[in-house]
Every structure is written in structure tokens, then in C-alpha cells.
Length: 220
Image (cartoon, rainbow, N blue to C red; front, side, top):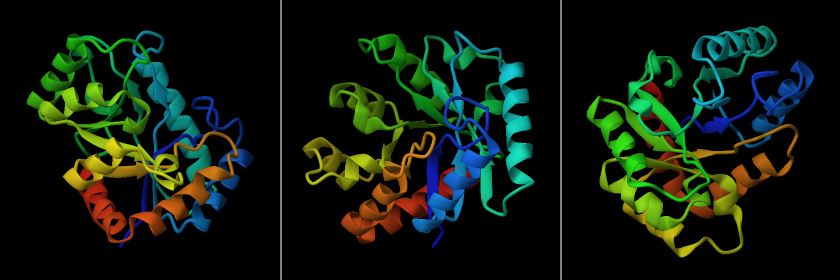
């Protein structure tokens, strides 16, 4: 079984997740302590702030720097902030996990609007696999609206490692709509991969099932 960290900020200088190659290499060392085999690099992409071509150039340069110094398997993706009409963004496929139609989408920390649901539905209708990043952070009512149109969920391992898992998070796990787990590591947060190990223990067999689902989303 491959262990996949679906949500990371480990590319040096690509966003505020890592300030240097040295930091990124230390992050990768931390990932090894949790037995992670595959890392999906998901630097932030804000449609209202970033030009896509500049973002892709920055991401490519950061990846090249890191890949030359590690044997860890790293897949390129992005954490894309949801906005109205995101489905109309030109060259959207470049933000998917490489070689797939899988988009990791972050929700705005503002009042949920029906237009957000409409954009997610439009993305799914166009063949994208929409995975909601750190779904545990948002009001469950907002997430349920997105589940209705076919979105699936990524949880941060911090939400699982807590003494008590929230009831609605447990319900999502039981429903089978959680297809990925992520450290969401920024800089050298020691808890990120300690929580990954704790989540593996707490979830038991369900952890393996989630990893199997994650593999489908990084290969399809």
C-alpha cells in the first residue's frame, strides 16, 4: 500500500509553505517519519491574484530545484481557491494533479454562496474530479451542498488526530466521501507528520481504504 500525502506546501519559494530548499528537504525528512511514499505538491493558486502562466513558471522552477535533490516521488498540483465561474478559467487542466483531471479546491472563508455550488457542479459536469481541501475547516452545511453535486473530500490529518473527532467528520468517513488525507504542511511544523501517524493509528483499516481511493485520484 502506498501512503499518499494529498495536500502539502513543500515547493521552495512557490508560496509561503517553504522559504528555501533546505526547508523543503527537512519537510520531506519529516514525511518519511510518517511512512509517506507519494507527496502531492499543492501550492496556493488564487485566481484573483495570480496569473496562471506566472504561477506555473514559479511552480516548475521550485519543483526542478527540489526534484534534483530528492528521490521522493512528488506530483505537481495546486490548491485552487474557489471563485465564481472558476470553470471558465483558461488552461484549468494545468492546475490539476499532473496527468489527471483531479482538482484540489479550497473554499473562500466567507459566507457560502449558491454560485460556489454552481461552479463546482459545472466543473464536475466537465469531467473534473473536485476534491475539497481540508473540508474539516468549513461549516458542514457548506460541505453537504457540495457533496450533493458530486464533490469528494480531503481531510487534514490534524482533524483526525484530535482526542475527539467531530461527529460530522466521522459521518463523512462512514459515508466514504473522504478520498484523501493531507498534512497541509507549511514550513517546519513538527505536528504535521506526527498527526499523520496518529491518524493512521486511529483510522485503522479505514486509513488503508482512503489511501486506495487517493491512488485512484492521482492516477485518473
